[in-house]
Amino acid sequence: MTGTGVSHRDGEERAAVHGAAPVRELLRLRPGARVVPDATGATRVYAGQRGTFLGALTPDRSAALELLGAGAADEESLLAGVRGRVAEPDLPRVRELVRRLRAHGWLSVTLTAGRTRLLTFRPLGPAAPPPAGSPAAPDPAALRLSRFAVLRADTSGMVLESPLAQVAAEIHDAGLVGLLASLAARDAAAAGPHPVEWPEAVPAVLGALARQGFLVPRDGGHEREFRYAQWAPHELLFHSRSRDGRHDAPFGGTRWAEGVTDPLPAVRPPFGGPVVPLPRADLEDLRANDMTLTEVLEDRRSLRRHDDTAPLTLARLGEFLYRCARNRGVRGDGKQELGDRPYPSGGGSHELEIYPLVERVDGVPPGLYHYDPERHVLELVTRPGPAVRRLSEMSRLTARMSSPPQVALLVTARFGRVMWKYSAMGYAMTLKHVGVLYQVMYSVATAMGLAGCALGSGDGDAFAAATGLPWETESTVGEFLLGSRAAQDA
Image (tube, rainbow, N blue to C red):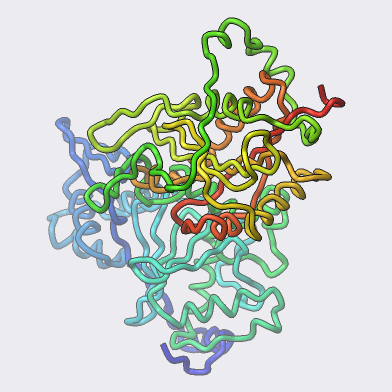
């Protein structure tokens, strides 16, 4: 929307002179809310897994609830609508219902300036108290956009979100986007005034955004406290969105992709390259003679030194992979194939794949391989080259090793195995699966007397370059180094 060139301060002065009420609040029952009466005459309102008991409603409160579900109205128009439906309404009782619905996060609030819709606060949960020190009508020069705020496109338009906010702000007016951008700078002089077509409403809009946690004092305010400073913005947003309670997106095992695309098979299709058969472990012998669970857990260490004079062998690598990651069978739930491997996986997803990057293994030429858990073979993906060397060097540097690891087990996720079924929590589940697999790998490496070490990060782009796999379809989510144990670590 084209601006008028009027600054924030000009708008405040104009409002003061003319006595304008610059912003109006329109209330409406939040999207997805269901009003459910029960057999006793009591009423509950639900959205997802959350609900609030409203008790037995009088006719005037029932009328108010029906009007809030039908369309947006300010409180006075709502009361007028109730008066038009009920002979003798108890308006204080209706106001108390509206207050209660707002407090419990059941009402969306749209702010308007004249006929212009500016934004809608869509509640994500019960209302939270405003951050300490949030002024009702702040000076724009004293505020900046929170470092946790994220402005993104959605089906409804632009949406402003923050893991610290209990609402999502749907932005209806393009001028507001520019205003928010002007408040992103930490330096007040660099921010400057941003012209909008509703200058008299700016203080009230900024006050509302500050009370919801989207704007903070220019010096950082409460965000300087360690409990907030410890978080990178993307990590706190991921934490808040991968658990229920701070968002209103579909969540859990919704099977949202059913009818959209077929689920991925439980076992990854072969690459079609040359294969190296792997020896299998003797499970009966291991049951009788392997280390005890307590010994494995107590002796586990992260070992970063490998004995290159007596490197890992094909037989030892085969036993390790067989014990950690072979596929023990495939079953179905009527919707998709479910895997069965030695480590647990939510919903039988088993989306993790292992790509051994072999540097020094007796019986296996160097290169990047895929471990086929069904056939128990290594399948060559690519021979050594720039991308493979980049992956190997990344592993060496991350582990601070003097020479490349004998084997770097690159753990990928076929994301569609999880994402096809789970909404919002799929990637968090994948990371939990990586941790479970790490523990199994550590335990087996310890029991076999091998050197094992999990890494905290890797190079997803180098893996994509080496394999040609689309980064968003299958990518590395973990790395585990494996080799023969050095004498000083024995």
